[in-house]
Image (tube, rainbow, N blue to C red; front, side):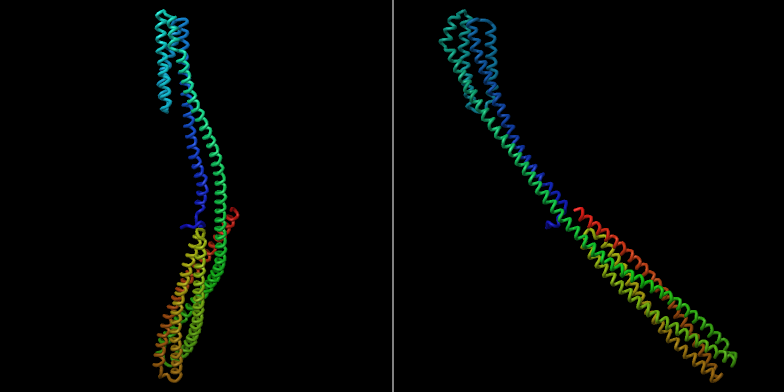
Length: 485
């Protein structure tokens, strides 16, 4: 599970917006239900009011029936008769309308009683109309009195009054309920609005606090990691500078070693030519022996010079070995520093991915430096072995020359021995030349390896500089982030 500290800022922001939205939806549902209830009650009140209007209209038509009848008794004319018929028609038109609108069986029964009473009244009126139309107005008046038409009209009026009061009481009750629902709606709206504002303000403050704290912690962590990486990069930069200086020094030494090796090879070739010349003149007799003796002295000096050059070459080879070991140690240190930089980059998280790649490249360059140093050590060992062989051959040549000199001084009859010694010297010089050629090739290979190592050291220094600049930018970004928060 993801802890609270590990949740993204987006989650906090969404949560902060979600709370007021949910509360608003909840408030909307409550208000909507209240409004629907209030609308239903308003429709019911309107229905009751309309029912009361229909009842009033029916009551008015009933009164018109009685008034037009009395007017017809006083003055029989078509106007009164038409008014009577119109009122009766309007009454019977409103009866089914009102009957359909009623919801309670008691009201329907009460309305049916009124309709029955009105029909009895109309039946009474019909009898009176017949008498009046027959010319018996006096009899019609007596019939009105005997049939108690006024009493029937008053009873019907009382029934209408009772029915109307019942409808008005229902209207008043519905209006009261509607007012209560409206009050509840207003109170609920105000309460839910205040609750939404309070909860939204609290949640917003809490989310802002959490985001600010989390961003501060992230900025502090990035700043700390960038400072540690910067310190590591400075140390690596110093190490890389030392490595570059060592590589440059090694390159210079190898150039000198190459020049010395070529000089020794030239001297060996010259000695070989001299030995061949001595060999070609050996047949000239005693004078040739004396000349050979002088040549042997010269050859001895050259062999001594070769021995000195070989000793110097051995010393320089030892220096190369020491420098190669130093480069190997520096490569190991660079590898360790690159590993530390990679660890610090991992600790920096998303902001340290670029530095992790640079640290990996530095480690690769350090490994290449180490391999080049190991290759140099191998070449140095080969050169050292060749030098040892050359020393041995040079010693043998020196001994041969000394033997030849002694033979030349003792007797000319030992000329054959001198000739054999010269042949041995020639072979030794040829072997020396071959060995020196191998040394020159080895030195050239070492120079190439040192060139690669020098390029790697420069690339390492460049990479460290880039990492240092990136670390500085990362530190500035962390400081800006903290200032922004």
